[in-house]
Image (cartoon, rainbow, N blue to C red):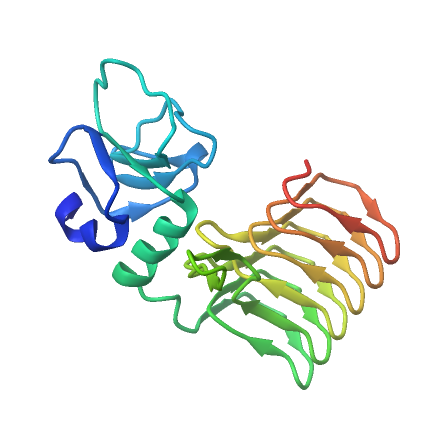
Length: 229
């Protein structure tokens, strides 16, 4: 378990701790899946959460009585979160779990933690599980990459076309559900979810954290922007 003192050097000189000064955490999660041992961040200010520690902007308006956990006011919550992740957690090492009757053609790269279901076909030169394109600029304007500790989960009866890339999740997994078909030269970004039986046609792009439902059709060259559901 980590304490606030373990991350003090990542917080910046003008941080302020509100609430439980002895709060402890041992995991990093998105806001929606936080638990009593989570460290999370919110760029929008106060959020009602079970998290042990929440990083918020310095101008966040907090309740007068914090009943549990701690809120830490910092200059840039996402940047501080990235620095804490980089300090405390190693990025996912290569770890592949594979079901039965899986076909992987030449040139395919599987990186990080990848779970592949049954009856899956991954065509030539596809790249599955690389770090996503998530960055936060530091005080000098230099883009700092966010560590990606999630993985990629591919369901049963999925087909992935040649030269397609699927990035692993930042905190949670990127998920391709059962019977989805993804064409050639597509990109599925970190934390995205492609629903059951959905067709992603050539050169379509699903940006980070986009949620595509079941039985959808993504047209050639379309782009689904981040956070779209």
